[in-house]
Image (cartoon, rainbow, N blue to C red; front, side, top):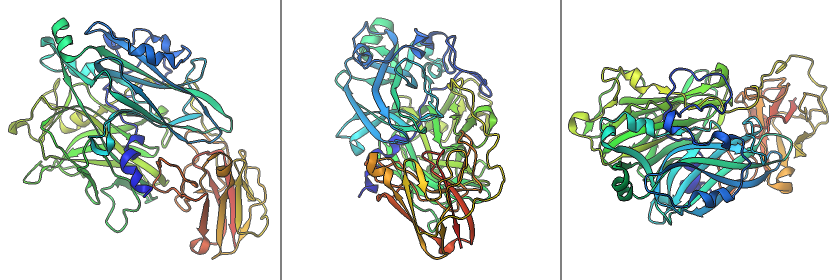
Length: 568
């Protein structure tokens, strides 16, 4: 039953948002500064960029909803917190509020900030998910997805997409309608990847246009088209295959393994092995914005259209089914791969995908599984659809760039960076990682390892690789790991094997799983985000399939933790 709970919230862990940026090419390797941000320009730039440093306050949420003259566009601030995130904690929390003003959301900037207003490094505090949604008992799952982000902190403004429309000068605009009295909820999971507690806030800056549709049109002549938000995707395990792994296209009914399946606002969505995650579109309209979400190790997320069953879209010659519409590529900082410091490509401002009711949109996540495995990986795509702009027969299956009618398929599907890098810290690199050396001397012969105080006992390697008696277990015995930190504070750990000696400090690009041993998150979480999780705070490893020798491992939730054991 716990896994069924994923149908309500699992997709809300994905980190996708819309918002095409204006910059072209690779993102600049620089810090965010007060003179501008990727994804914004001119009128779209925040009116007060000091928010990057202002101390957060929950009172900002009350100020945000003060009604203003219809058509007024302003950046509002919603601060959630303060949250004390204990060492290694990955608890999920929900904040709720009532919208106090009518209007349209047209831009977003997510941040994690300390009480003094400085931004937290993603190397220390990871936003596993942070999603805004409506509570709606009449909708599928009791909620409707609005906007989301994750560790890549996708951001930007809808306005550049509206400017590409030929009717922009006649007043056409895009927005996501918010009504006064709407019940809003903010679901978030902050993961402390350090051994110290942190007090932080989640800050969401929203570019908001005040007023109802009719009020704004009367005062300004602008016709706001209400976009329908859609989020589809899955969580799954990527095995180390020695090749590129497309999920779920690379799977079969026999090897697909545990996975989640999410689709909002409709339930007409399923994972089809060998094809992809297929969503049947319930409306006729035009997708005007789109972006993907993935985890480290991903090369990108691909959206394609197979069309209707009785009127399919043509195959365009690549390996994905139907007609490829968008490739939301993973852009790592400095080009280092794999890395935890990355962003996802956004659809270009002029990008459009025309869909008909009954079209089958297909999602596939592309992972480089040659060197590593990726437990609990994700592949999600968020899109925003203008259902007032109908798709005719001549436009069926068509993806295009409004600003380049002669663009090729690859040029249309190409996505662009959404931001300048938001890290306020130099990118951590590991110069002494996996440095060869003599293996530690075997410790006691035992079949139990206790995980306590963020260490593995016996067998703790410590942050710098200092051994503490790796235990010895006989081949065929069960080696049991007991997570005692869970009872002390609901802190979960994993036992994830990494190539020996697996020493050196944790960085955003080290270590990664070698695919031999994976416990999953050890311990129950009411809002589960991992398909490999164990409800009980213990993990039993069958050593009968392991070769004799030395094995090193780490905790992928707190990667400074290392352990090892021998099989004899």
